[in-house]
Length: 143
Image 1 (cartoon, rainbow, N blue to C red):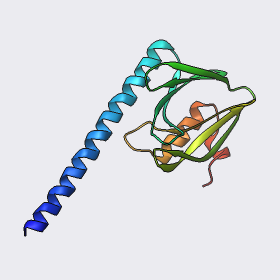
Image 2 (image 1 turned 30 degrees about the vertical axis):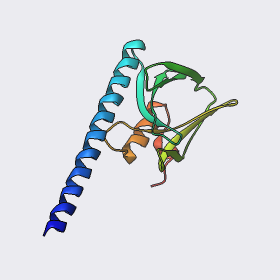
Image 3 (image 1 turned 90 degrees about the horizontal axis):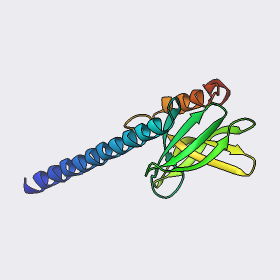
């Protein structure tokens, strides 16, 4: 009986830790999105995870014919033109996992990220990000 109790307690503790981490991440994501919206009124903001070994938060501000990439600290990092850019769907490695994401290539520059509008990564996030970038999801996603 004691082993069963200890096992159940471990599962509950693990779930509480995961829920706490998700809650903190959601607050950080929303704070970053809000900061970018205040800095770039009228921009459409795509919250995302950056490609890399750690799940780093990004915000992609879509400003008509260009995007701005903002880091998790709310700092503008780079700007890329969308005119003539290639946008593709690919697997993106972030935080030890691999998720459906987007790659934007323009000249010698590229950006890979996983759109993340909600508490969990969803297929609808990819479709929404494509639309926000001026793309038709049907041109990129298989039924």
